[in-house]
Amino acid sequence: MFVQQLITGLSVGSIYALMAVGYSLIYSLLNFTNFAHSASVLIGAYAGYYYITLVVDNPITAALCSLVLGAILAALIERITYQPLLDKGARRIYLLIAGLGISIIGENLIVVLIDGRFHAYKTALSSMPVSIFGASIGVIDLIILLASAVALLLVQFLIQKTKVGLAIRGAAFDLTTASIMGINVRRLILIVFIIAGSLAGLSGVFLGIKYTAYPTMGNLTNKAFISAVVGGLGSLPGAVVGALILGVLETMISAYVSSAMRNLFAYALLIVILLIRPWGLMGKSMEDKA
Amino acid sequence: MLSYWTGVATLTGIYLIATLGVSILVGFTGLFSLGHAGFMAIGAYGTALAVKMLHLPFYAAILVGILASMLAGALIGKATLRLKGDYFVIATLAIGECTKLLIENIPSITGGARGLADIPRKTNFFVVWTILVIVVVLLHRFLNAKHGRGCVAVREEELAAKSIGIDTTRTKMLSLLISCALCGMAGGLLAGYMGYLYPIMFTMAKSNELTMTVILGGAGSLTGTILAGLVLIPLPEYLRIESAEEWRMVLYGVLVVIVVVFKPSGLMGNKEFTVSGLLRRLKKWFSKEKRNGEKGAGERG
Image (cartoon, rainbow over all chains, first blue to last red; front, side, top):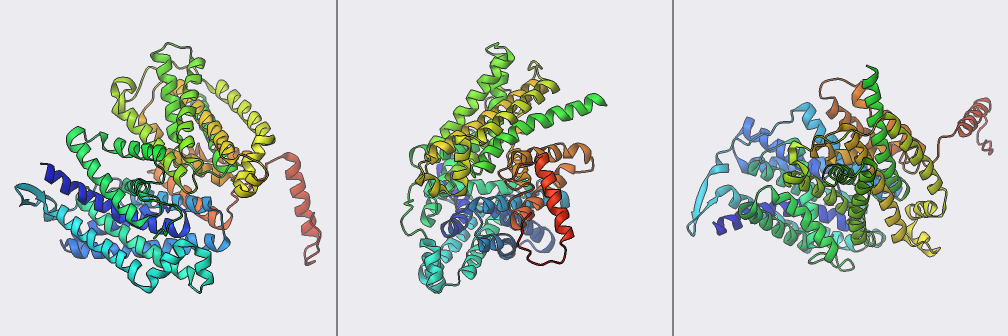
């Protein structure tokens, strides 16, 4: 029972980690909360649903398709909305407002154009169990855990070992200085949005398979914000650790206490962290953030 | 029919009080909030429970609601206002959701998701609009006084404000408390007008709506907020089409993005709507018409 809950918790946490890393990446570069993140999650979840229902029941290709769509949407949002604002040197609050506007458009367009119902993925995987150490564990949880780990390791590799990654780390340290050093900051920001968008699209598919696809699921990005704060705002390893902790704790609460307490617990945890340790578990605002 | 429109006007007035509160915080002080419906909920349930359980008279109960709302605001403000970064925004999000979930999860006191009924109905159109006028006058006075100008200074350039001796954290806290008080009061009035309360009255969508109305009206303009509120709050009442609520939210979103990208100052910018200002504007516009063709005439009205 405990092992089973732990695996479920880790798989939920790894989905949160996908969202939280994208969020933290953008935050570490531009110092603002990208509320439009939920749009990429939404498009990922619905694309995955339609892919599996209409094309072929293959979660891997569905995930790839959602990943690409999430990335495209994030790139479009960045180019159409954020870029003009950043060029103008607009105050941070306007970036927040624009993001909020986009997330509201996304959520309500889904209701208007599709419907407001819950769409369960018709995949055979979602209820298939496998027995490990005598505990029956959902195959889907393992797949999610594995795929998220691979995606996060890829991002880690990209940031630590490539030239683009070096540029991202530099820009996270100081965007202006990075641009003086000859880094094309506009392109770099676009790249970061594409990384974040593809992770969000991927998390959308996983959320859809695990729960369902529904219009207000973009609110699940709130869990990414919570994870990021718990782990330390702007820190990527912190975001992953925070997300895993949040996922496991939430699952344990809903298994052993009450599932209604789950969200209440998450938000209460956030308020407690903000009160006693606002810089989070691994955050240190002056440190190298990426 | 008349009573129907009185109802619409009363609700508009109530939400306008809350929107004005958000305007002080978001518009004038430049702090973003995603959870002010939560403060309305605290005010509403605080008022309703004070009436029902403590048997206080309605207006004393509203005070209880306002104080409860300000207390919640003080809690997150104390924790996050001195921090750099988006901590405050995320904290408002948390308090908004936390309040709603708490209300849903302690049904023995709050009625849970089924709602809280049989609240004595003690408010009406005249009470709400009298309070609204008083609030507008007081806010106008506040914004032209030292602390109000401090808020604007913090919004415009925090570092500069600090360097001329404004305690920025305290100024932000003051503005947060004012906005919480107004939202709490609006919540209390809502409880006293509707006679029942449900947690779904105070969702995140409602919080977003409050903030977006302020942005569309013009961040930093009381009259802008009022104009936007008068037009946008009763919008679903005259747009009676299918899924009007969703279309309205799409419209809000699109408008907000367009406004932010093309005219970040909103409808009124940081100017106030006055009759003399309107006349000046018209005069300027006409003289510009006359000078049509003269390029770069250097003069400015």
